[in-house]
Amino acid sequence: MKLHGPALRLTIFIGESDQWRHRPLYHEIVRRAHQAGLAGASVIRGIEGYGASNHIHTTRILSLSEDLPLAIVIVDSETAIQAFLPELDELVGEGLVIIDPVEVIRYVGRSGRSAEDAGTEGAR
Image 1: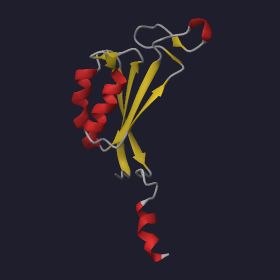
Image 2: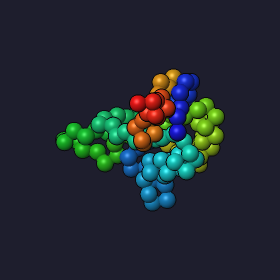
Image 3: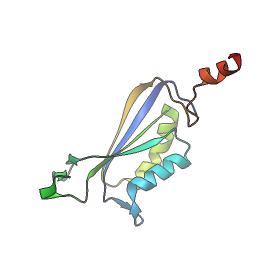
Image 4: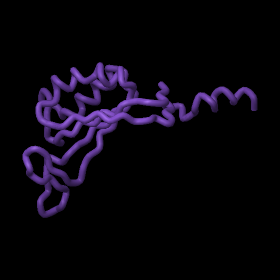
C-alpha cells in the first residue's frame, strides 16, 4: 500500500489500563484499524503525562504508575480516517482524539522497495 501527498494523522490519547471487553483498549483500536484497511497504526507508550483527571502518571521508580499514557497514531487518507471515526465513538469513553493534516513524503510496504526501485530493477 502506498500513500503520498496530503493525508490526515489521527492520534488517540488513552491510558494504558483502559479496557475494552476485558482486553487492552489500544489492542482493540489497532485491531479495528487493521480490519478497516488503514495504512498502519503505532502505539506509543509515554513515560510521563496527565490528562483530564489532572493526576500525573510516570515511570519514575518512586511513583511507578500502572496507567501510563498511550498515543495511538494512524496516518491515512482523509476519506479513510473519516470513515474510521465512528469506531472510536464506540470505543473511547475517556481520552482525547485529534486529527492533524499532514503531508506524506513516502510510504513503502514490507518489501522495503519503492515503486521506483521495482520499476528500474529490470533495467539493471
